Length: 289
Ligand SMILES: NC(=O)c1ccc[n+]([C@@H]2O[C@H](COP(=O)([O-])OP(=O)(O)OC[C@H]3O[C@@H](n4cnc5c(N)ncnc54)[C@H](OP(=O)(O)O)[C@@H]3O)[C@@H](O)[C@H]2O)c1
Image (cartoon, rainbow, N blue to C red; front, side):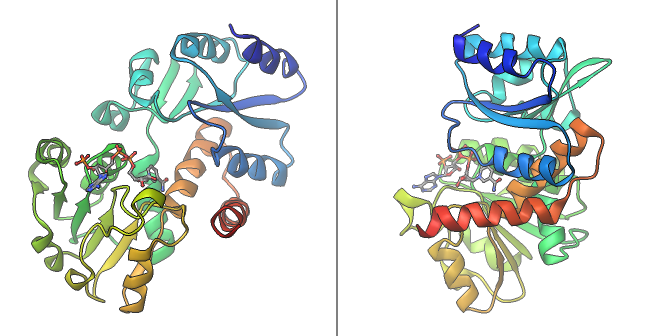
């Protein structure tokens, strides 16, 4: 085990329960802010840290978790897929996505979960009182985030999911996650849908001038969700708002994937508004400073 990991696990051997996010790069992760705000508010003796690790160190981190040295583990890029093969078992969602973002230690061993898709859906229910039953959804993008959203929407009661993506074979594979209600489409299908999700990186800093779809295809009877949270409002989201469309950024997906992880690890209800306040403050500072 690398010296940096030894130090972290040794320092925390009894005084508090350690939880961590592992990834590379991971220094800018917002997960410590979300979880530490919740631990502090509930006066729990837990500490959540970001651990920059290499692939070779994954097994050692899991061994620490098996030995009780880690109470919770979040997984981010580039380890979500490999983690699905390292845990003892996966939930059906993590298995379908072949991606794990949260590991839970149980008597049955280490269980790999994926809370991203339910995080998206619970965020939309929270923010927009969205009722998915009977609705038609369009998802633009077919990467990891899009796949998680599609898999969750497919379980939610929507009646169709149209996947629109630059690379066609990825769109097909993502649409397959939705079974019979999934299909590949084009931007021209967007006006017929009730929910439009941007799950591409169009709108982030290097791509900020590009829109995932033309604003003319959107109308005020739709709900528009952008998974991007940095910047807090992409130019596309700002324009949808000017057109009177109910639109939402990706903060709630980030928040609610953490809310689910928190409860899985601690068995406690997460203090949602405290976590929301902490993340909004941090993102506002990062966006506007
Ligand atoms: N709110 C949250 O909690 C949360 C969680 C995860 C991710 N996200 C956000 O979701 C977005 C996607 O993340 P990801 O992990 O799914 O990334 P990813 O796996 O790399 O997928 C990127 C997607 O964007 C598309 N894309 C990229 N550049 C494009 C361009 N110039 N023109 C058209 N399409 C383009 C890709 O299309 P191709 O397939 O054609 O390459 C692909 O569909 C990111 O903005 C990320 O910040 C948010």
